[in-house]
Image (cartoon, rainbow, N blue to C red):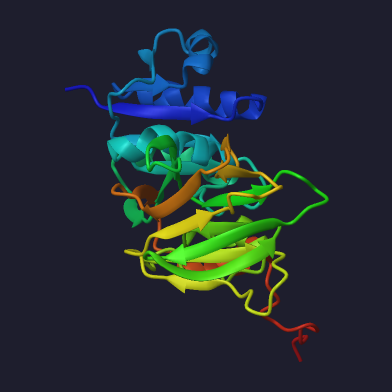
Length: 297
């Protein structure tokens, strides 16, 4: 039976197409088939005309190799999450917390995939639902990093009531509220002052954005918790909901948001057992030698 790998690339980087085409050529020689984003089908077929390349559909692959940054991996996760396909990222972006390989390591990639020389981490994702005043579902999405409820009017604060497990917690006058995963704790939530949470921890984070309140600290919740975000019926400021900065919904009057752990987990392929501490130090260039590195005597 033919083995199939998804090859998913950044939509605007020629480097991503170049490296993906070389990878496809190498694995094609080993008898693999491939599925790709529909918009990339013609470009990749043109580069490797002899390879069996088909567009993404509801059929899973044994692995998805993603050429791009974390944004491309988040895009790929929309397809991979419900199918349980692991994601192996090649970092062509900037920080790249989700990506496993740097471009200098790409020569080893075909062998890694062919011989399955990788481990798979399973990480918590979020299920986001928007309901109207009658409780009917009006919009839903998944999120790998975070869901953010943000104000639409720059000159006004958003008035958000946050409830945890059907118990009101606090009403914040704020720019917005984030609900994030441990994976997302190094993304938007980190910029908003949230804690860094190791990705194997099962938890959710609630992070207020510029809340005008004495109680405005980030909180770490149980993975079984349900977060509810509500705007008052007479609110003069409408809110916009964003999931991973990719999918959005304008809240209509009377709508409210619930966030819980997704029934599926994001599967991230890792080539080595590099501790998250090491990755954190490397990606943020943390000064582990102090402000003034001691010279050898």
